[in-house]
Image (cartoon, rainbow, N blue to C red; front, side, top):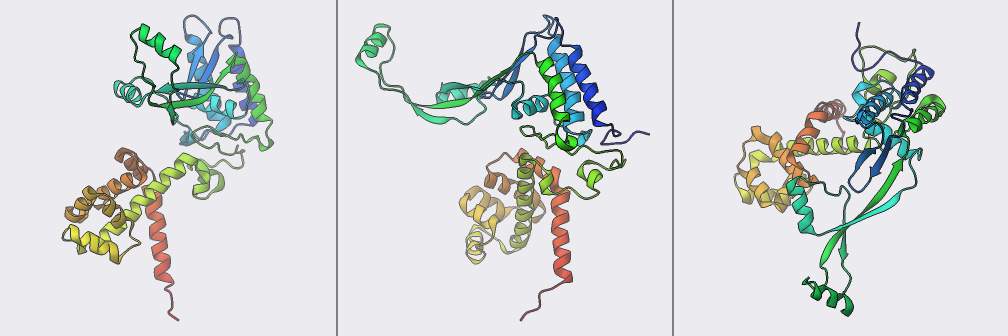
Length: 345
């Protein structure tokens, strides 16, 4: 019988031996020279070397995917990201294993060039740039530029992008050795910093319960915000904002018959986040004044996107992902308040 969400438990030694054997098998003359570079400026890994056919990169990605699923996530399939092999390499970088010391990579672009790259779909820096003013040109440089019919005016403000660049030589060999490093950790639990998803603790045969998923299967309790990564916590916060905005919109919408009512209610209810956002954005104020109540969820998502400065599609994904959790918390709080009303003194 197949179990959803997790693999049947295996001992850590068996998992380590299996992953190490896979990496060591291709540490040979044909594939062993495969190396990988981490370009922090563009946030991507680039492979070089290995077999001329290009199969070395595919083989490594397959082995690293299996190693990440088993050694970083303990078989918890629901915790695995879209590209687990990146999580494996990110874990190696965070543990400072295999990758050399980072070298600083710098690129200076104008705002116009950056916008052109993004519009054309060309690679653009993934890090945030800092405002950079070009140096003043001396007389000798101005003469040289004029001789070659080039503009002699000083360079205007540009964006300076700076990030680290690291290289891992013989990545098959280093990954095989990294299996020993992970298995030597106390309790066998790797610290998956730098990856998208947190690594769960390695469960033994006594902990495994078929039919349950994630932290609930290991601890027999619901997942809390402490079990989430930084990105997942941010997503949960945005979903809670949507729930709060929907509740506020449902409360004030029956009292609004025009835009002037939004201004009046904002003074009467200064704690209302929805009215505060509407006061800062005239287009949202018009939406709040003339939209129907049944559209409050969509309107709350629009308000939350403007509040968190995110795309509406991002907020929609956050809401779909955490809607059940958020609504369950709200209903639980409501039931508690109904059961134990405050007694006025």
